[in-house]
Length: 86
Image 1: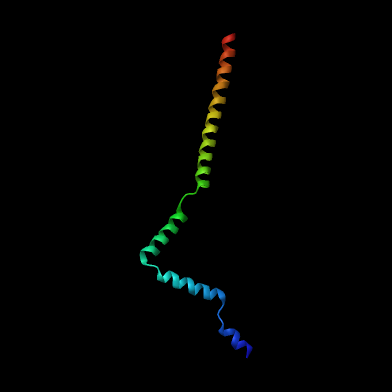
Image 2: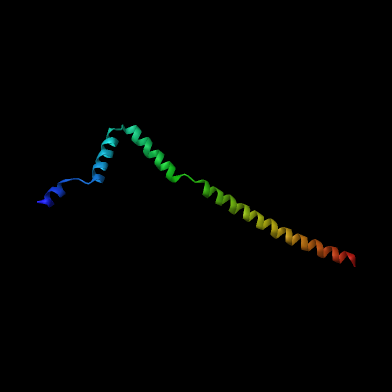
């Protein structure tokens, strides 16, 4: 007999979900649509972390090019000076 009594009671989670469902049902369609669009925009927006990583990658690439050409040209200038001294 104890089993029948315990099976009739609803879980608190189910009661909470039912209450939330009623609250959402009371909202008008434009409000629900705006909430949905806001959530989608937040999900697809580029975050600060991604922008920072992209800027860091571009900066590292530019620094690598600069270092490559600086070392390449500075060794050419040094060898040219050595040849002119003869």
